Image 1: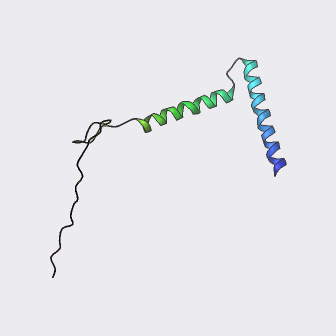
Image 2: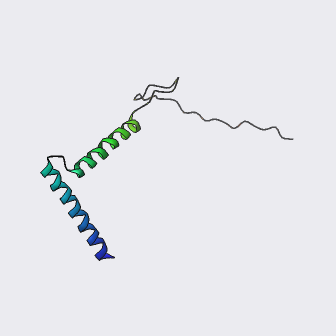
Length: 82
């Protein structure tokens, strides 16, 4: 299994090196750079929606403000005994 993994790693390194050399000879950007650039751009697009804050709920304090409230105990309503 180790020999297979090492040979697979060596083959992938040779393939990337060969594609990069071919890209440099033809004057194009190397393919691995294009692929990683696209992946980085897509992850940036998707992560913007996750971290963007939406509008506050009606009646709620605006985001970023701290509201101080007094705590009080709430008693359970007593049920009538049959």
